[in-house]
Image 1 (cartoon, helix red, strand yellow):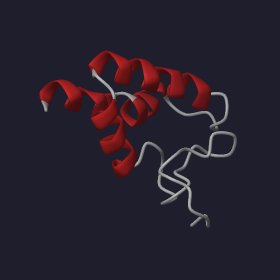
Image 2 (cartoon, one colour):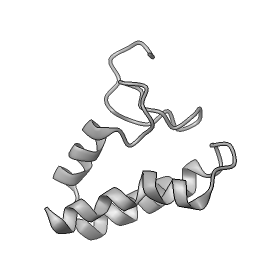
Image 3 (cartoon, one colour):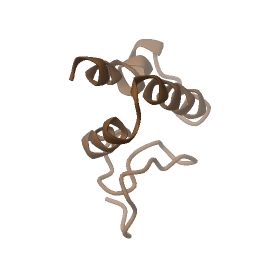
Length: 80
């Protein structure tokens, strides 16, 4: 686990894991924060931008995995 007092933010230039809990970002606490602070459109735009940024850092990853990690969960904003 990384040390320090970072929030649940991604290690953008490293591996896109959470700086606080070392899980793939967006981790559950990051998702909850994003859900609480963004409307549905803002959330999807933010996460699409994150996906586009991450794809240049992460090793080759199937598009379906990236979609699940960065976008699929945003449906909770509409449903919940």
